Amino acid sequence: MSDESVAVNALPSVEVSQSPEDKFGEYLASRPRPQRYTPQRRKMVRYIFSKHNHFDADALIDEMKREGLNVSRPTIYRTLKKLVDAGLLRRINLGERTVFEHDYGYAQHEHLYCEQCGTMIEFAEPQLEKIIQEVSAQHGFHHAGHTFVIRGMCQSCNRARTLKRRLDLV
Image (cartoon, rainbow, N blue to C red; front, side, top):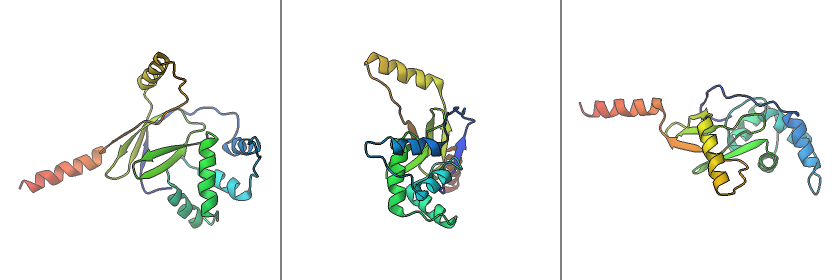
């Protein structure tokens, strides 16, 4: 849904008891003031969970329009917030940009983010998870989740930069 590429290192899937669509419907119905699961919201949830990638709201709006799925801009922004609150999507802040990714049905994982080309590489590291649990326990902190993004430059961009520097020396 966006112009950045995503490299996924065979992250394990997590078995879930409900489809994202059903889980979101349950979330909306269980609110203090139950909310309707409108056809626009349903279309949006189906579309988002039909593929796995990182996207921002504007890219989602543009792509859904190209696909003929007309959902209003305010509905998209409100629904993205609710999908995060419901635990279906994760919000990742990348400085001036915010992207979303599936959280429901996917194992905890982290990201390497290339600030040059926008590539995001997903990885899972058990040792990192262990450290987070240990630090949380040491502080009596109830760990509910985390987002870990390492910013820098990917191998391709770094290689291109190094080649350009060598050519500048000639």
